[in-house]
Length: 149
Image (cartoon, rainbow, N blue to C red; front, side):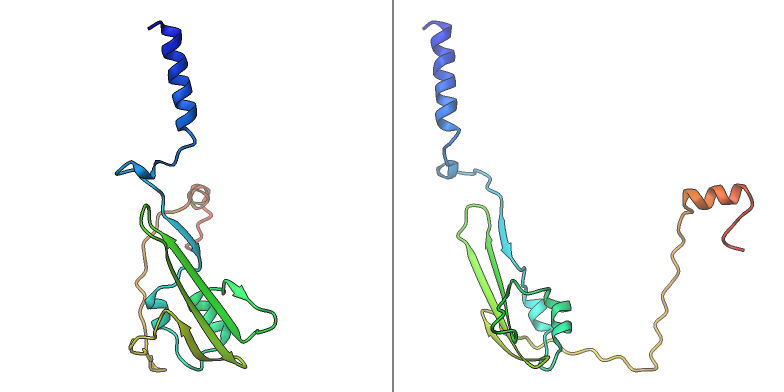
């Protein structure tokens, strides 16, 4: 077989196979596809009745769907397709009355995470971390303009 035929067949095969879906080949890597809000059970466990919308947004993030006709309803949707596996989709709907969280609906159920209450007279000591001086601080130190004094 002449060389130009072999090269022509190789180019033709490469062109035809470049548009193929290789899911039929075992052990082919396919990237995970995450869409929507990542919602975990730990996040849902932190929700408590009576939380304000701002507190809920701090825990859960901003909702994926904001319906202008139902401002008291926040919808969180999460879809994940790990590699060659089937797609997993979960959702949770939070219902507010006024500014207070009143109801949860969807695939997640609130857990029994104990609430942590700090006493008002609690003291928390934070140890200091020795850090290396920045370039500006080193230059100031050369000229005797230390920030420490």
